[in-house]
Figure (tube, rainbow, N blue to C red):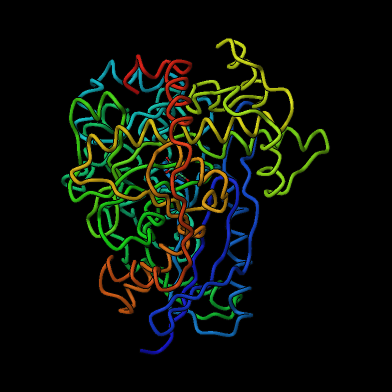
Length: 496
Ligand code: LRH
């Protein structure tokens, strides 16, 4: 088969990139063409995504692709979940999308459950309750009598909104729509009642399309300006985590994954959703995967903790290379300060180090003061929380979990990988770090006929990347630390 090249726009909550992927003799070659920072736009008390600036970055990515001088078979976009743009009757984008950490959804699930029960919402959707789910964002806008919502004919999730800006065509891609808490994972259709109860017309969401669907071709002006011509734009697995999970280099199904970035998403891939009283109590989610699979997982606050500390330290004029962060932890005694990464005050604090210090003070621990102490506290606490979630997954999984695949940017941290293996007691396989972009490209490759199935996609990924293996060590010490973690975080008393 001839070589084929694909363009992936892979956008995360802190950075985005344009990646050129080429399938060549059963192997995938990747080249990063552009990388850009993605920051929320703060306006008053509100956080937004500057979708117009993101669009500019896509245009720069198209120009960079042209400079490569290879024909582009298609383009795909994946982004973080839940957020959306409001689209008017005449097709214009209304205002700027809210970002999921905006405080306007605080308390919204509780208010919404007065109209329809928590059990019913979870039973219909199988989605974890997080106040930023699109459902509660829509409810918050409707409660606030938001005039842009009133003028909106439909919503487009962020990858679909950007694809709309590239092509002029509107779709609702399944994996990204599944993060909204509006979809039923069994029927893969929307549940109109959930929108009606949120005060929104069910017609706000169009028909669902599956990954691989042809959205359209580059608009004439972009085709000309970029000199790429009328390239196809495909719906991939528009949710970054769905793309990442599709790129897990596993050759059998007995694995758990940890997609490690701003969030740590830990879960398993299953054929059917798992929705019962236990999963409701533990707040596990059933998001849509590729080829009809379900991503049964839990969100754990991940590198957000560190990213926010680094942001604060930068204000003091101090920046660290990643290697330095890893190395400085060795100067700090083990397990002197432990936090629950998902404690509510870490969701969007004005100063992360202060929030962490307060948690440690309130739980009668040594209060971190040096940067090294904060970093060690974060990495150890994350590893211990991973074990907590993995223990629950082992009970719920319909198969034995033999390996933990760590993918995404966090998989480049050998210390965290080793500590994750130590804390969980199972072998960690680390890589690929660019899993989201790889998943994006491989769905395009499948649509182009280069591969036939998810299994074949994973085989190509295995052929193309080097995995690092981490074997559990120091089990006794880590088991003791885990008991301490359960006591401090009170997770031994709670279900989630
Ligand atoms: C990770 C992610 C995650 C969602 C969150 C909003 O980037 O997509 O899966 O829960 O962002």
